[in-house]
Image (cartoon, rainbow over all chains, first blue to last red):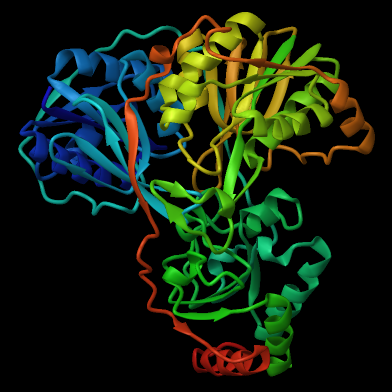
Length: 315
Length: 262
């Protein structure tokens, strides 16, 4: 029961970074519980993945060669089989789009208390998870009853595991039902006239712009600065700008020299797409907006007052 | 075909808020229909308008206050609504399994072919109820759907799942299924005045756990929120002071130093 099982994640032949971060989280948990750390590689080139996943602190890698890409039935069945075959009572899964497509089903099937989107935890008498609520405005600590549980961990919160471990690699065969959800292909979205990832300077607009016709204001600023226009998710959801302008987890990851966030609160999914920018400027009315946590320069003020003045400066 | 839409009334804190105990003070919270669920309602109503769905039923777990929210779903075109509440939910923080147990009982009574709900709730952000419900009731599922086409004859939903990094996965999902809906799937309508008037006459079936054949023990939570606090700001931003003109002037200096506008 003391052991911990981490499930890795890959797409199109590559392990995703959050897999190594989940290993770090899993190792911390295994140390606190006095157990071993098991890591599962499910689908794709599991032999190559098993080599990469054998990092410091990993005791066993379980290689489930079954299919190429993510299939939630295979993942759910494989985790179930590994819960039976090992002494693992704690499961750690990346809090990703695919993680959320099977982790809740695993928790449900095996009656494991579920806490998603963890940004930290402590393990003493039991598990206490730190997670955000109310759109990152507050953090909470959540106590979990019992010593069996499933935890999904947010990307970028734990350092990736490094080094080379001395894990055993064990092939595992898993029976699973024929899938009632069949992947037929993948589609790249966000192609188009401009690649915001190439821009040196981005003027990026968010919900604070309020109305489609107000976009002219930020377009004018982008022109004055010789910058490229990008946006946060709500602007694209509303159809005000095309998908290829979207910065964030489900859009583009950008690393310009200067990123100017206008009326963007800085939700975690947005920040994931722009935190690597060399310099970040934020203009927002809410002094508590999370965007100021990662900004280098901030103006707490109304964009409709500040942006026209800024355009004048460069006119 | 019958579509069940799960909706949640979510709380959004004001810009300035106080924390009392393990939650934000009620006076600093505004309530609204969860943004993700708004897209799920729209998807369901569209299926009805296309003649694919015969009936759209909205279901929520929420106190009496939530009637306002569920009436929004009715005003937008849901045919009727079920609201479940019980003292047992007041006591603590319901975990995913507790919500699933409640929805399972509603699914048994309603017998839908398709269940739609938002990917996550804006306040608690668990993002798990839909997929866990699918497992419990033996439906197929897909999470984070941002494109949906239902072929009722073939019993298949053709969906796109929005993965990270601008990639979508195209998947065929056998019905019956639970789909969790991402924002951007469609353009949620505003309720029309006619819709709002009609919603006043539509039925909201208020039930408690006993009505559903459940007891407080069935929804006992394994989770407890033990503290809530504002995270310490990690900001080392230079906050530029002054009125709009002064602040813009200083920012222009900074930007020019970095070679912007040169």
